[in-house]
Length: 361
Image (cartoon, rainbow, N blue to C red):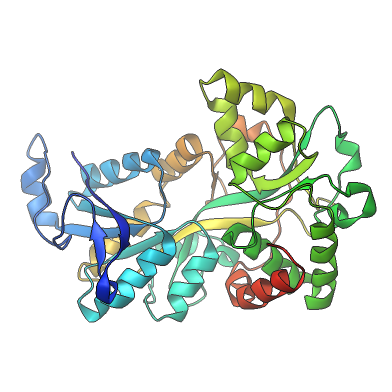
């Protein structure tokens, strides 16, 4: 099959969004190719309009397999999470969006606060997704997990020197820490989790100490932080685990060299556990294909789909009895935080203000 894919590239007047390849609604007939009678099955089964902030070509396997199994076509709109949320808001009751998927619970919480998601009652989703990784009202569900880890320069740091996120605020790490900006949702959610677990004052003291230890002003994505550690620009960085896995699995010699120069450490193992976030999704409030949308989310927690998240996207499966891919598994078994990820969204406004007060640019 061929996925109908469109990408948001900007905002026009009245918050209308330009879309590559088409200026029409994704509800219009899809330009698809199929074999063995799949076209007839598709016509019977209908479609879903997926608004996704996941920019991974590997996800095409998810959409293709779902269509092959159900006959339901996937019309894909890709964009930044905030752009997608604004698009759904501007489209209002006439929005064609059926499913919204983002790569951080903070964005899902934002969409929920805007009234853009509807509650879903699904025994399949509730059985597969742990309670702390989904909304209690069923407005969104975790689909994969991401661990926020510490990477370190093997020449300059011994793993015995590392312990917790909080310890990176100690004086011995002065000028040795790299991390991306405070505008990054991954960092906002990490800080929000600390506010939830330790309170605002203790968290602010930690963030101020962390900022004091920055080796350079925050810049770049998580891969840039890993490369900075490998190059000796800093000794440690806080990143999502799958960025390291991508480098290790890369065919590029320069990526392999970077991966060889850094080690992976899971912090807070003797405390509250390593911070874990999710990629997740929910059914949009005015979804025109609601039944198909629920079927799609239920498919994403099947063993087949969870293996794709693990093996191709280097994420941890959200379903507890599934294993990560061998590269990720080699990092280590680890204790993950049991905090309810809902708190990352609820504490996000406080986290953003706190990071600003602490001088985290």
